[in-house]
Image (spheres, rainbow, N blue to C red):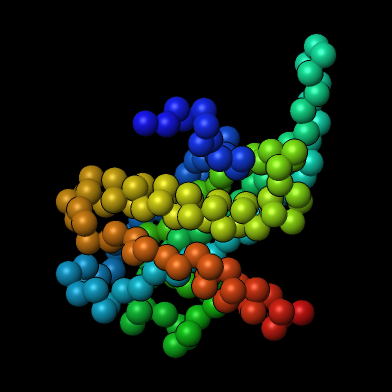
Length: 168
């Protein structure tokens, strides 16, 4: 057995929270037909910087960063466009979460921290939102129907980078 002190990662979650959560079941959504609705996700890196802290005779350098993760569940037939952009999707469930992360600046360089912020941050927040989604839907009696599927975060990051490049 290993002591956890020997295996603590150099990248850690400091704080995460759901900052927006909304459900609107005003239209008749066939929740048992998984082909009638879909999931849309997006993210934004809010901040990433080097911090310096001095306490008594100890000095520490570390990175901090914040990322937002957006989730929308939408009825496919209720969309104005066949392939709507994320901002134009009219969801029946919408969740926005944010996470603040820190990294050891003695081990990680800024580029590595920024990659970890997106890849590890999104992995963490997608699971955080998955639990929230299950909790809010089970309270109204539709438990298990809207479980966020596992996401290939690396592929998601590639697609987001392609989209950014195309829009420049």
